[in-house]
Image 1 (spheres, helix red, strand yellow):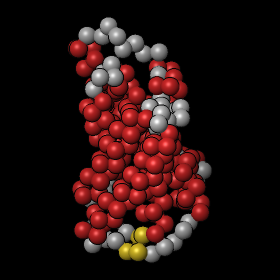
Image 2: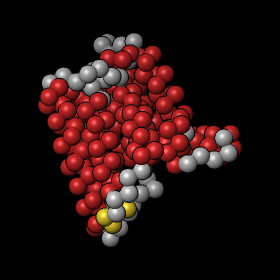
Image 3: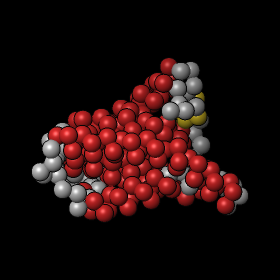
Amino acid sequence: MLPSSGLRPRERAGLVLAVIALAIALNPLNRTVRIWLRDEVVKGAPFWLDHLFFMVTLMLVVWGLIGFLLLGTRGLSLGLPERPKEAWLAGLLSGLALSALVMAALAALGALVFEPHPNWPVLFANFVSNFYEELIFRGAILGLLLKVMDGQRGWPAAIISALLFCQGHLHYPPLLVATVFVAGLVWALMTIRYKSLWPAWVSHTVADTVIDNLFKA
């Protein structure tokens, strides 16, 4: 387990920088591995299979191993949430609120079209891939930052993890990248408050389900 006590400020700063540097370096490498696995190894895959098996493969393996070795399941926030009734309600309501925020951003960009088109394979893939993303960003990355910061700097850790979450969405217009940052910050703060990533997963999945299945951008 990663010790948090006894670290000097310089050591804490160095470890925070190491987490940030690894996250930044892994993102383009993950994209290369994704394309190689999807296009060269299996010779193509539909969108939902890409989400299930290739989207964050390298990041999931690296951050998953680091997280389990240094933090364990508790440090990865894999347990059930504290204050469960509040936590599940927060997950549902924040997911709906974030859906509204994304819709407002799309409308401002002139790219919002109401077009219900439920896609069950994609819906299932989002359930799974959203867990991957939560484990990476709100489990391992946020957990490591909180551990290194001795759990006393929740807001800075949440902001850093949210900024790193934006890295995989930089192909979006700036307004949508801003909504991704808000979502990442909300999910990080929820994870800190409830000591579990599951409410954030609920929120993430509600938002993706509403946006992906009811609207076409």
